[in-house]
Amino acid sequence: MGNTAIRVRLMQGASESDVRALKAWLEREQKLETHRNSGSLEIQERAGTEDGPASPMGAGLEIMLVLIGAGAPKLFDEVFEQVKSGVRAWRENRRAVERGEPPEVEVAPDSDGR
Image 1 (tube, rainbow, N blue to C red):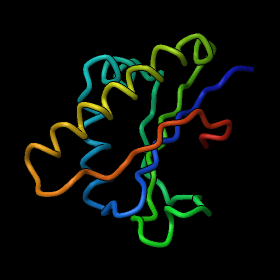
Image 2: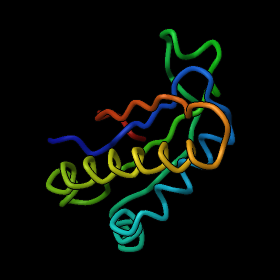
Image 3: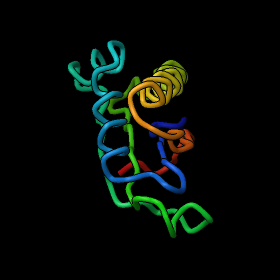
């Protein structure tokens, strides 16, 4: 079975408001919103599982995008690219509207989205 989940983790220095703002941004991305409305994609906020250098100062939250249904593995590459594009756009927007650099964001496949 192919990948069916994408983990979006904001790195050191991210606040809870950064996590929530990025989640809201991704929910409004047109193609992701279409998948959400059709029931083939869920976007969830959850406690982070990071054990590395990002966790001590980070928000401790991450965003999971979970593809649902028989077509999920086929949609994965398309949704993965859309998420990466959405994250880049969010970082550019945040840089324009808030002081300082936006937090780094890691976007990676996740084998256990639930």
